[in-house]
Length: 490
Image (cartoon, rainbow, N blue to C red; front, side, top):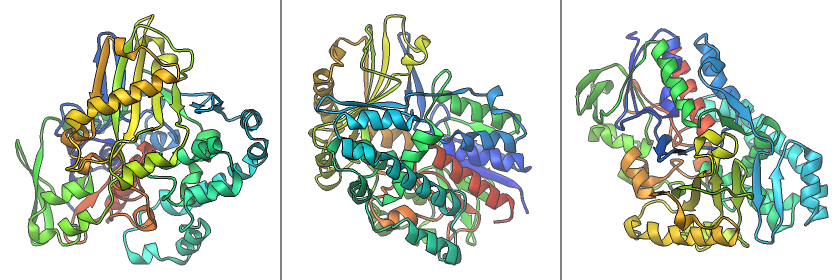
């Protein structure tokens, strides 16, 4: 077997796959169209303020640690993580605040301030969340599901029924909680995979256990250090990463991949791993090799939500903010109706702020704050011109933050917006969707596009659009799982 692979893109799935294959003796070349590796995660440094534009809530550190162990390295020699406690501050429209914590007693005390009944049921919910995580870890997160035989195995089928796939996250939450604050607090986990708590399956309640029990982590020097660590590990293993090079086509001869065409010439390889969005990358194939993922099939997938990012560097501090802070609107459901039904910017979105300078003051000037502000947004459609909408929606978000005590942002020294159209242009994410396809249905949650092409021998897919799904650690898992399967002979 020719142990040579070309990987398209240098996001977390691609870098994880590159590490896995190289650690098993493969020659690997990674091709990235952007100037730097990282995919949707990029570092932005302006006027003394340092931002991470992209994923900022890091969980499941064992996923990253396992990649270094696979390569015979210590993660701490490349990147340092620190646990956040409290994990995230949640600010509700009625004035109540819940600082998410590993301390179950502290959580019950905070919830009891507005709902003693919900507080009494918190332990039961957390037990349910842990059960769902254990089932997911056993059957979905750590194994590929390439064939129907694997997908319909008795053990998997039985556990799939145990996670109640037809029960939505919101319906499960209402079995435990009644107050809108608690429902929003736990319902937000659906957005971690770009989806709606009112449509996505109840399996995502497991993220309550992931965050509270397993922890939320900061990364010393910023989240982009995770990318730099994997790039350095790739270098140690002999992986060649070439940036500023766009793949323009996947070459297929007699039904098998033989390499890729790029803006810098042809790169031969009998194994090609596509780390970009499956719905976009499939268009790099010749028409006769696109039966499974043709235009009609692509149109049948609902993209995940996108987002409007505002990077604000301002010469002041905000007492309300922790490293992670979420401000919730009075009603939560209309945000998702706007995004997925009306496909417009929400009138009253939840707003998330990552202020890494809270934990690492050197990320901003001594008297300043580096704020990554994210408001969920619809994926790109012809109905919205983000060159205009960015200003309208951005100002709406600023007004909401001002009403919540995070004011004066119009005086920021740095104010930069990044739209769904920018995401689509920079990363080729289908319709600017952050997480690939949504998990708003059973099919799109548990039966995502396959990691292995049906038409083209030697073509594989990693990333948020394919199994096991979206989110930084889960995308990294997809890269490792695919790398292991390829190295073991497919």
